[in-house]
Length: 303
Image: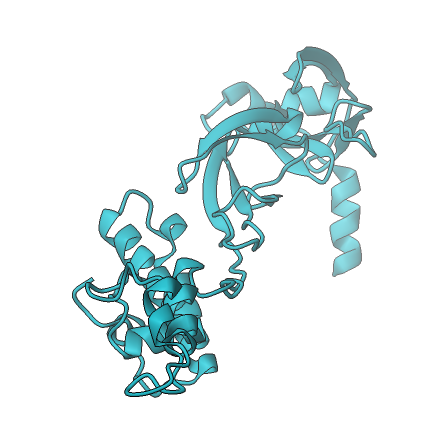
C-alpha cells in the first residue's frame, strides 16, 4: 500500500468509528471478489480495504498507526520491535535521578506488549449478502411440456443442473436458492434466477395443462365426415371428424395434454375448414344448383 489507510477508505483522519465502518462496508460491497471473478486488481484492492479497516477499526492499532508505530500493513516499524518488559526493569522505582518514581514498563506495557497480541480481539466484520445471478435458458416446446434437466454455466463460474418441470411456460423464471454469488462474513449467498424461453412448435400450442392443435380439413371432409391421423405430444392417433363439422368445432382427446403433479390436461383439436384456392368446375356446377336453405332463412331473419 502506497496510500495512507485513510485514503484507501476515502475518509479523513478525524473520522468516527461509525464513519470508518460505513466507508468499509460500502467499498467491500463494491469490490467483493465474487463480483469481479478473475480480476487480480479488484482482489488486491479488496485486500487493501479489509486490511485498512482491520487497523482503523481497532482503537489500539489505530493509535499506533496515527503515532507512526505501525505501517500500512499493520507491521511494527523499525526501532519499535524487540523491546521486552525486562529491558526497562532497571528503571523501576529508582531512588534517584531520571528514573526516580518512574516505571517505564507502565509507559510501554500497553503499546508494545499489545502488539504481540495483535491489539486484542478484532471487531466482527459486517455481513454482506451475495447477489442474485440471472440466466436465460432456451428449450423446445416438447421439453417444456414433458420437463427436462439441463446444465447451465453461470457468470460466477458455477456449473449447475436445472430441473425444468413439466408444464413450464415461456418467460417463466425458476429460482435456485443459494446458487448466486457467495455472501461474505456469514452473509447469505444470492440465488440463480433462470428465465425459460420456449421455442414455438410447428403445430402445437399450450393453454394451461391443455395442448391445442389447429387442424385444417377440406370442405368435403367437413360435410361428409372422415377419419384423420393426427400427432399428439407422444405419438400419432386416429380421430373421427363428424359429418357437417364447422370451423371452430373442437374435439377433445382425454389425458393427451400436459401431465403435472396436480393435474393431467387434454389435447384439444380445433377444426378449421379450408376452401379450395384453385378453380374447380365440378364444385362450381354443384354449388350453382345447390341452395343452402338453412343459411338463407337465417339471413332473411336479419332483414
